[in-house]
Image (cartoon, rainbow, N blue to C red):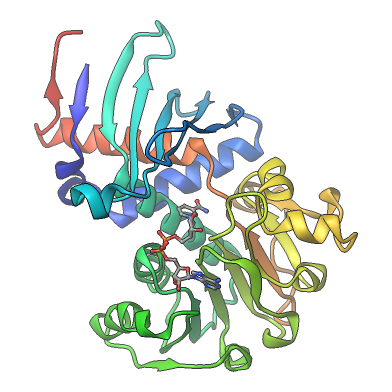
Length: 321
Ligand code: NAD
């Protein structure tokens, strides 16, 4: 069995490798060559922790496994550890033997950023110049760094519920040599691409804040009850998802469906655009919206990619098992 510890991931994994892995697995999902297993998520009654498993099988990439982990809210205060903890286990699909154990914390941020990046590559207007960020927490910096590689952006604008956190994303913009401006929510009308990545349970971005032709990647809503954008925005947009079943149950679409503003059949898989079985953006005025809920297959895809990189660089730890 191979082990790739968390401490090795930052040196090994690249944004390009994460992008390629996530794009490939979204394509495989849309071609019915890969599927996610039902998600298990439990409040375990200890340390207020939420623990669970996300797994799947990609028959095209021959990646089988699961990500185990969750959220321990007391970690930072009590132990100086990050609150989100996860580990990916990969299995040999021919034999069922465990193949690898991979640190999943940084990989989660990289695969989530890769997902919105894939949506921008395939759905945003080619001439997009202004990117708007709603959210300025841990994931937001990864999101922005990856997104900036997808178009010739000339400016970053940002809004956050906690404005004191905005310097987190301003720093990423500055590192990329781009100007940054804090805006109010109506100011988002200037953006050609908007990423929402917050833990909100009520909408911030309203339909009236978004200009025609914008691509929006909604990345924060991954649980029943969470919501970042007004349901009416999904009715105005062409909606794409990583996985439709998750989009309607735990993604942004849950609210538009509940309000009768959107039907499940209106949602397309992003993978279908990658495969060319869906035309994607129709014209420069269309609003496209990607509901990125985060699927187990993304975790497995980036873990398999990092195992390959670790093996190639002689940095995977091999143990008899
Ligand atoms: P974080 O705690 O570092 O940041 C939270 C962000 O949400 C901050 O910008 C904060 O200001 C904002 N926020 C908090 N309360 C708000 C409110 N009431 N209204 C508007 N904004 C509010 O968290 P993070 O690690 O950056 O994660 C952000 C979200 O992304 C979480 O909801 C997390 O579950 C989700 N997430 C999704 C995926 C996926 O694959 N889709 C993957 C990882 C994380």
